[in-house]
Length: 122
Image (tube, rainbow, N blue to C red):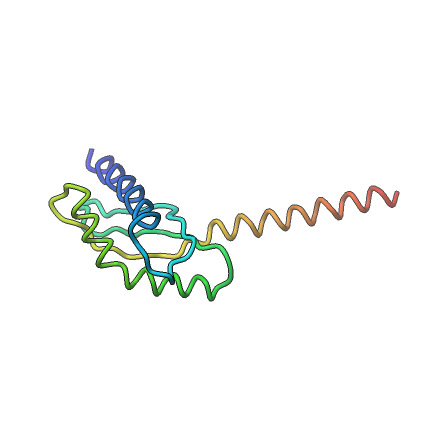
């Protein structure tokens, strides 16, 4: 039962933090950011928030700086919005899965083009 509770709380944190980035967090360093998932410890004291940022690595670094700066604000807002005994500590972690999926898509497209070119030559 406890595992299900932490999953529900993690999903709620993901939704609330995503909404904060749209409405409340005004740091210009935080560009277009997507919260991909939240992992919460069983005791709900630590939330690892995974995010993705499109664009070059420099854009990602700026976003990480902005996220670290906004961490206190985000935690206070979570405490205000979600009724928990303890508001979890927050760790932001870059999630490369979206970038990897885009890369795989490009590789598959190039393979498809090569196949089409090879079949047209025959």
